[in-house]
Length: 486
Ligand code: ADE
Image (cartoon, rainbow, N blue to C red; front, side, top):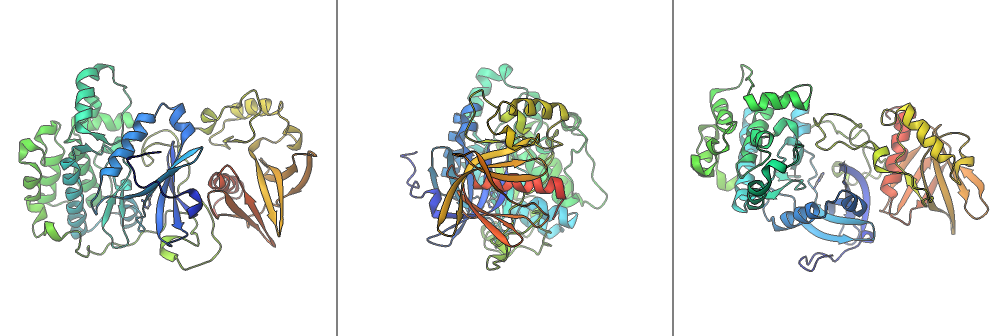
């Protein structure tokens, strides 16, 4: 991959994967353990096909360059990178205590000492970014992770840019820029809506929104649609609940200025030194913030529906690992998920020549009944259709099925019903079926291998193409659909 990175020392085989930490359209983040050192990491996996299809080479390169520059305790660190035929892997430090959003949602709002502390850490993080001339462009509580010591680690540099690049591009090209915005509607600064450009002061706006949210539980500009939020942002139309104190209001008002040069923290207003002198921060020792024990904050109930044996807070607990989605799929607005998972139909087209694996046929609500009929029609031309009994095949691929010393190659068909059968691809005979029940559980072992546990038996399966995570996720989705949450 990169000569500039002396980090290309590992391969996927050096890691055991346990649970899904997050996902968006183009990437998945999983918790993994280095088998040699036992150190836990968050590995961001980017599908090369997505980069190519979306013409996102520059974006990915930019993200990698930016994240590789960062060397500060308040940012996730890139430890290694490697690639295989299909994917790029970024091995990042693992922030084991989840994201700030979970804590805000759990507590309703954070205590004043907590807000002061975490705002202080955020200010230092943004000051560091400004020193590198970087705009993050997606500052929000979900991207503020917490370490085991409860200090922040900012993540997700997928939309970050060098301020100088943004300036040049805006000067040359502002009228031609796409109308869609980067970031998340709730935190988007007005300049991105009006001029379609961000600048070095744009993150200060988002900082103001995050402080408001920590204090009150909700971001200042909330509404039912992105468009309605944008109207409020442009008019700076928000109000404070009675309990917000005057110093906090003054700080937030100083950050939520339409003119980015008028924001507290901008060079025009005395820079970060002036921001740090605001009375809201009275008593903060800026030099010791990262070593200080943060004020207590109540722990959120896990946002994962099911815990895994390797989850950070139960590392030594070796109970059955269960792989599950972080949050139910949402469509439409950009509220909680910055980039909602796209309707899988749009992403995976059936080609005329039959691919050796398929995936992504959704279930409602992703798949409307019209879509379903179209897919079923296409499926009828497939070699595998006659195994389906008229049901839609939701995922299919060749897997190795291991039992004792025997290893058999089988075509696995996951279908509506639900039904999961395996076929001998040489004789084209159905060789067996994995029985479905509420008790069926998946467990990712490595990028390639996974287990399906059913009462009385465990199936040991290997996807040579490295899609173990996708298999487990799809099976979990199907289980969730037919049986509801665990
Ligand atoms: N989710 C996304 N990135 C993460 C990280 N580095 N640590 C923990 N959870 C994450």
